[in-house]
Length: 220
Image 1 (tube, helix red, strand yellow):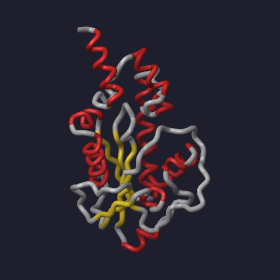
Image 2 (image 1 turned 135 degrees about the horizontal axis):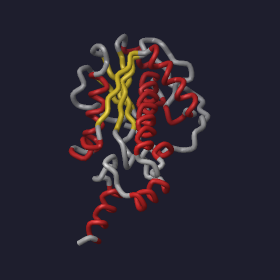
Image 3 (image 1 turned 30 degrees about the vertical axis):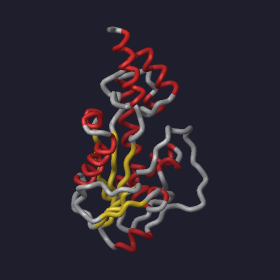
């Protein structure tokens, strides 16, 4: 999986090339792209998507991080309407019980399981193929910038998770999740000091763990 960075101000980045379907076409029918979002945040689930485009290239499809909010939302709707899509997630509890790497694998496997049929081949963003996939697979570093099906999966995963965090922000106002989607921004850190840790925070992640440890030390 590609290394994540905190969200930047929304706006399209200039790129000279866009992901295409060359790898998918070379393999044959039944190819899915798999990507995930949410390895790095302090709060919320990790979400993965599996997308089969079957020769259809969404206009302007790209790595979700390179798209404006408006463009990403538009592509999400188009992909959901025309492609074969599976979405999976791993909860905060599962991240805590296992670790973020295992939880990411679980989310990916669930995304594939959510597809209506078994894929013939999977192209996975990153440098590792998750164990347990029901088909042959290839890991592609920066796959979301190269393969259209992986780019489409990155869009579905990001929009799905962003919407989930916005919904959680309504239940837990003050942390700015509608803007930082759970990442460790200054706003989020300040809210933790003022409001405390919620059930949606990843308590094994170092900043949260450190805060809880310091609170415990002060009360003993």
